Image (cartoon, rainbow, N blue to C red; front, side, top):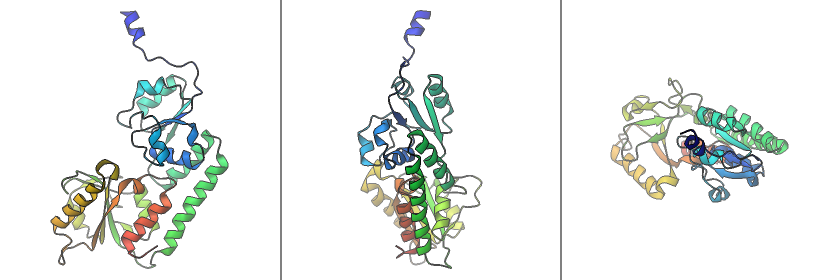
Length: 278
């Protein structure tokens, strides 16, 4: 019995000098932006940017990591969200370096860029990237109408076929930060958690000026956008007598993954909220 148990254990490589695995999409984008994409030997199932990441081996996701393949990969380091405690411990037990990052808000982004720059010895590039992203965000902030602060609800997830169980951006989230930067008010900034689940009736009771519905382009293609727009049109809230000025269906990944594209994310939000803002 003992021999059987030993033979089933995942083999641990003696040499761990085989590069980096990233199971955090934002970290993957940051590493490529730092010029260290060639250090990556694998990514998560959800790493879709930049296009070069699509050619790398997949090691599962946050909820279903391929633990045995990760341990036997020979990677010298792995990047994980800080809540993945079981996988963090499993990797550390084999001698793999573990870099944990938070993915909640702009402060977390700054810390992640610094940590990743140190991991791949690109500290100067990391400092430049962080400054560039903040400069782009501030440029958008300076371009929005002054004195106007529309109330906005951002739906980050929901069932594809109805508008019943809606997860919205709450306080201390990345989208809460970005809404403030583009001169808007998060209608759920006082929610008890970062991403509360609410009903459409609860949203309407807050009387937002704009609703932004984030849909995952990778999962449903353009059809998911058409379906979402159809649901909102059928809801009746956009009729001339309806309570909402506008509902915008936007691609989710561009607005929920912090990193090199955050400047563009701010521009997208600003255009949706303020109209002609560039």
